[in-house]
Image (cartoon, rainbow, N blue to C red; front, side, top):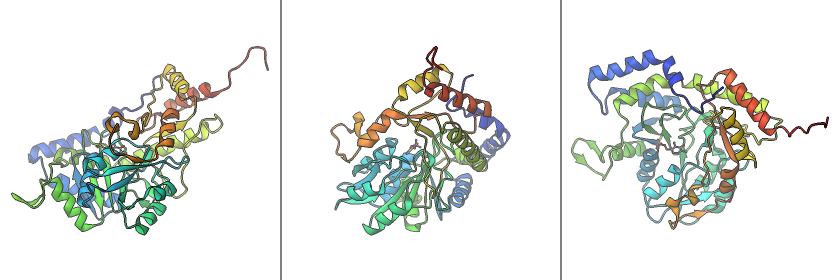
Length: 373
Ligand SMILES: *Cc1c(COP(=O)(O)O)cnc(C)c1O
């Protein structure tokens, strides 16, 4: 049996009729930029995230950059970021001229450790940018309190956490502002690139919207040196269809995660730990073992595709060789050698999940020696 890591054709096939209708609606209306689909998606997504405002942007990285710019964070400023994240979190900080300061994770949740964050604060720190990694919200109670004590902006990188909660509140409403990605493989994915910023701060919402549209609120009146970073009508129309299925898809991810957690509990693999205050949406299901490469090879032979998120800590990326970075990436580095992401998502059938379980159990069972009972 072959178990793909990701297969978007299955969930899309199930809603093909509605996707077709959405596409034809846009084609018939013949308006492609900043029209009613984007407007409707923004209000639907804001409501979903329990935030006052959502602003469609071109992708998740731009969302993070636009938030930093809206808060006037730039050269000379420091922003705390996880040592173990997709490099986009760091690139956003570097892009505005600020310095990313790495904070190692809590080894049980892989999310930013609030004590480490507290130690990393300097007189130049302007913001904390936790990532809700793998779909589990970071410890927003502690991180928000830390931000408040030090007068820092708290920005959520929610690119992996559409629908995740912390103490009952949705990602996207847990900090001052949040960026989401609609890259196709995310829990809510467009059929191309897309992103959104959510915030309940009206001034920041207006600033992000303006910056993303050439620094303009009124045609040909340019108050700011903005960029062109917009969600287009077609992606917004398709995302509106997919948003209606997100709860079901996240529920399916939760069910698969529950099966993995129960059926792999006695294998010696280190399984993901859930903070009791968090309601994760399982963008990824990441196991940890010192025998990671052997496990990955065994699964590969069994037809199970796995990935590593992420093998190289941003601090060790060539892009950051000689660049101003600070902080602590020790644990982030170790994790890069020991973690493995198993297939998870609405595309998986129960028998495929069981096949992954069986292959993991085989790989981790002690070798049988002939003649020894
Ligand atoms: C995907 C992702 C991003 C970037 O989103 P894009 O839409 O691909 O630009 C940023 N941060 C994290 C943690 C991500 O997983």
